Amino acid sequence: MVPFDVYPLWDIEPVRGEGCYLYDKSGVRYLDFYGGHAVISVGHAHPRYVQRITEQLHRLAFYSNAVQNSLQKQLAERLGHASGYPHFALFLCNSGAEANENAIKLASFDTGKKKVLAFSKAFHGRTSGAVAATDNPKILAPFNRTPNVEFIPLNDVEAVEQKLKTGEFCAAIIEGIQGVGGILLPDDPFLQQLSERCRAHGVRLILDEIQSGYGRSGKFFAHQWAGIEPDLITTAKGMANGFPIGGVLISPAFKPLHGMLGTTFGGAHLACAAALAVLEIFEEEHILGNVADMGALLMNELRALPGVKELRGRGLIVGIEMEKPAGELRKKLLFEHKIFTGAAGAHVIRLLPPLCIGRQQVSELMAALRAVVENEKTLTKQPA
Ligand SMILES: Cc1ncc(COP(=O)(O)O)c(C=O)c1O
Image (cartoon, rainbow, N blue to C red; front, side, top):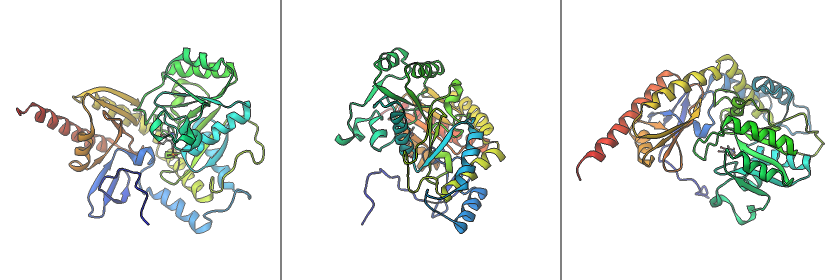
């Protein structure tokens, strides 16, 4: 048997990680400005993280959700405190898509309705409901096509009102910052109006913070820049620094019923230990403050980069929209300068580094970016 070939792969195999760097088997070092797709929050192989998981593994890796698990309670309490949502409840699952499935299900149970309002360029995952609310027909199988999801443009308050007043919607789902779509920010006043319209029409507001949350924007969740409080918040990626976990933060307006939601693996001991380690490190190392400082430094430096059409983002979720396609540039960053970055479409370079990057890593990236951009300029100036 071989792996099912669904991923276009770089011909590089990292075998070890440390902080913001990865190493291949020949010892070549790579700077990680991609974070394995916004997953690495506290850095590769953080000693406290490794120790916490190792100790838990020796004690108990897993038992089912049919017994008491005080690690789940500790995680809920710590996450409530760290995120500013101590009054919410936590449902744990295993991935971002699964978190969105559960959030949509809760909204539908709660309102007795079945339609979901989503936004153009949205990405919410690849499972049934999550992919239906994703604005990409290429990844939608016929089975996933449903009239229950409608899309409207981002930042269009009037379109929100037109849809919600039909009374057919159980939920509106929106990313704190659209990641896969190209680092597109909902305006703060738009989020405030969306929240207010949802409340007025009895529609549950789901904030997908899977990519933009867990400190990445400089606040715990990106929607907190707009000062709103959604009904449901979904999280995954940075939550356990690479250990698979997802979660739904649920407002006290939802009343749980036994059997309403469930999972075999969600909230198991090892995953909780990994997620607790991340929150402990957040506190000890003032990760949110670092994101704000390094995000400001990065944006400031990027403003002076030639060839940039638009810079978007907050904290350490940054989109550099280049005037020309950015594919070659990213290849040079990777193969000549040994720096991983992400992409969104043809023109956007996506930066999603570990949240613990420092000045040294920002200067390394900037030196490489300047070199590749200057090099491209010289090449295009040369006579044919
Ligand atoms: C905003 C957003 N929602 C949901 C998902 C899906 O998460 P997962 O791949 O863990 O299912 C992603 C993944 O990239 C995402 O960026």
